[in-house]
Length: 221
Image (cartoon, rainbow, N blue to C red):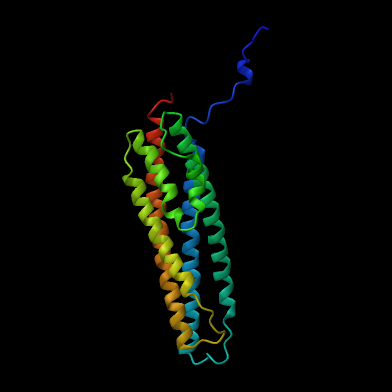
C-alpha cells in the first residue's frame, strides 16, 4: 500500500510567534482607564465627605438628607470594578501571547496555562502570572526588574483596596461625627488607591513594553 504524506494544507499551525502591538496598547489603555476610574471614586468620596462635614458644621445635620451623594460613589465604584475585571482578562490574553511567543523561541520552562490562569487564582494572582512573564523574559536574555517593580506596585494596590473594602461601613443618611470619621478614612484609602493605581499603570507600561521588545529582539526558531 502506498503512503502519501499529508499535504501542508492540513498541517497543524504553529503557535503565535510574536507579540501583538495592538493587544499591548489595549491592555495598557485599560490600566490607565482603571487609574482614571479610581480617581473618580476618590473625587466622589471626597465630595460626599465634604457635604457631610458642611451639613454638620452648618447645624443642618438633623434635617439634611445627603443620600444623593452616594450615587456618584456607587457609579464610580461600579465602573472601577468593571475595568479591573476587563483589565485582568486583557493582561491574561497578553501574557498568553507573550509566553507562547517565548516558547516559539525555544523557551521551555514556561506555561501558557499559568500565564492565563495565574491572574485569576485567589492570592496567587499576586505571583503566578508575574512569574511566567519573568521566566519568559529572562530566558531570552532580558531583565525581570521592571516586571518585579510592577508586581510590587500591584501588590500594594491590592493590599490598600482590600483594607478599604474590609473597613467599609454603611453610614446613616444624617451626618454625625462618627459617620464623618468613617467617610474621612474611606476617602483617604481611596486616594491612596488612586495613587497606587497610577504607579501600577506607569510601571506596567514600562514592564509590558520592555517584555514585548525582548521577545521581538529574538527571532523564532
